[in-house]
Length: 238
Figure (cartoon, rainbow, N blue to C red):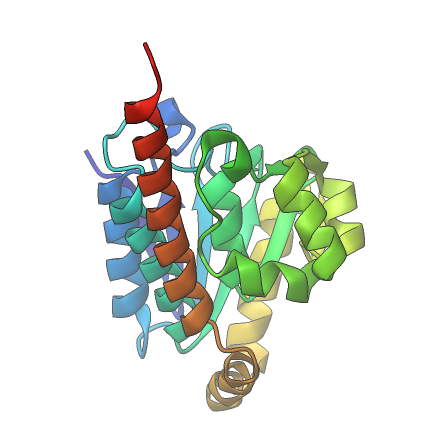
């Protein structure tokens, strides 16, 4: 059973996270397939649209798997690198919930559009891990440093209207209009924009905001946090 559906449409590739029974929770297989799909899309597609099947974009990392720590963080970082390295435009079509690492992944997308009943939330401080996906670098660029810290430290839910107001998404649409809106944006890019100019402009934005150091440091700090948490757990009395 596939966990990532690929639907080509000319120069547009639609990638659908397909674990609806788990609210598209991100396990190793799904993250690995997403990295592979993004890498293979370069040079072949101008636009990649990423969405989720069922009731949510994604509920974040699959906490039922054993490798929620350093190994999974490494895969998240690879998705971020692949999205930024893709030589076209990545569009996030978001609905339902975008939680934790799934919310973080959207920061590496070029454009983000949400259904009006979408809820966003970073839960990392609750589950005892650091942020990933270059969130420490990309989120402040989207919403400002002060608001980024508040979103990470409090973990409060953010509804779609606020997400648009503070710059997390480019547009909010009703359930019936979201598909049409994303379709229109994707086809306008393919039909009316220079593919080479898009590639060069994206490269300029990416060059102005380097994330490799943030990705590496997030991975190191998460490993250190988990090491200290394990030591505390082992030294605590039963």
